[in-house]
Length: 267
Image (tube, rainbow, N blue to C red; front, side, top):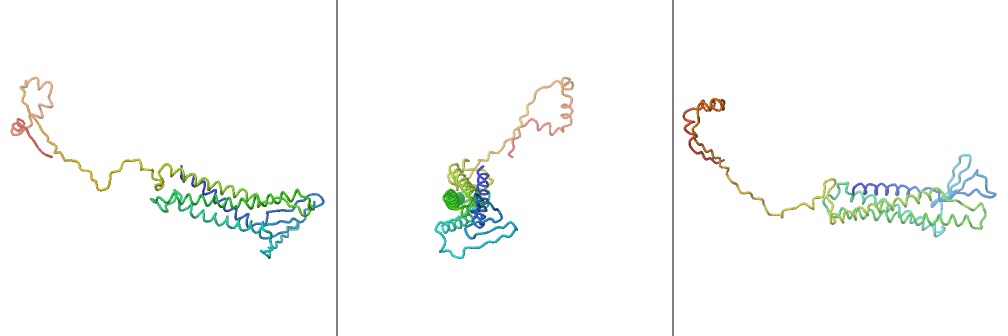
């Protein structure tokens, strides 16, 4: 159960990392709004964190990167930094979670394995939070600009990268929460000690202290054969125990004489 929760959280974190990388690199953060007199869709303007692009109806696609860094607005610089840091945290969280998950063989038998998985979940949570802030900030800015008193040619709509970034940040946070929850649940049940997968937990079984040995006394088995003589009628024996009398008749006189004594032996 714990391994399944960890795998689900890990894959959600990977999808969140990929979505964060896509939203960081592509320029579809804001697209042209075709409203009012600006209803000609022959040219589409797009803005991103690193470049501005123009798509024409003829199929031409041109992009121009921002040549300056200090000349950019403060919110754009902060969005760049936070998205890059979120991507770095996501990559680091994938590596750490791979080491600490129960379904891997790294650090088997170590009490720190569950803590490593918890650190990976915390990094996924932090990465999702770092990407959620600039995406929400930019979405608010686009919406506020759209409903403000600016010319229609300067109004933009929410781009695809903002939707991808929002979904990616939520998946990263959900994956980190599942990893952290599995770590807390495993710590509560096993007292912070994680046993290698897929072997069951044997902490509840009784263990003998080291240095003690099991000693069992040896009792020799004594076989006793007590022979007793009972007068038997010959006719009755022939009628009721034919097979027994046949076997007794085949015994040698020496064996018949030995049946009258007690034989005691050790095995």
